[in-house]
Length: 121
Image 1 (cartoon, rainbow, N blue to C red):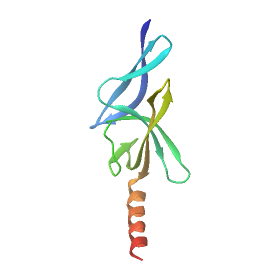
Image 2 (image 1 turned 120 degrees about the vertical axis):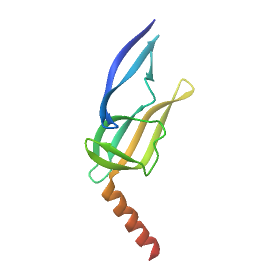
Image 3 (image 1 turned 90 degrees about the vertical axis):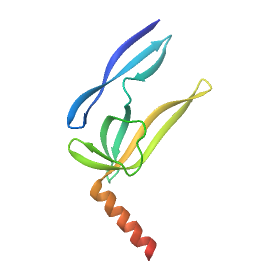
Image 4 (image 1 turned 60 degrees about the horizontal axis):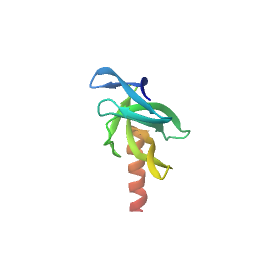
């Protein structure tokens, strides 16, 4: 039996407009698979400045890289790490989580400057 359900992921402002991202969840004989509409994928976003702050699940393109800038709720962040986690299920590795570790842009630049000073000394 194949059923589909629409689930709200996260409201993400893109190019000065707000659009809704939806996921299609397919259930087939007890197994759950998610197929994403469009090209954006959900990422768990965490600001890693102490203490770590969860910024929620946001949809971004699948090719996010370190050093890119993203705007979340009016604040600009720079990506410091991209993590893709996989779990072994029934003899196959399946994607279980995609995570972005971000810093505020000012903090990211300050960290780069301090690391550069440390290398020079």
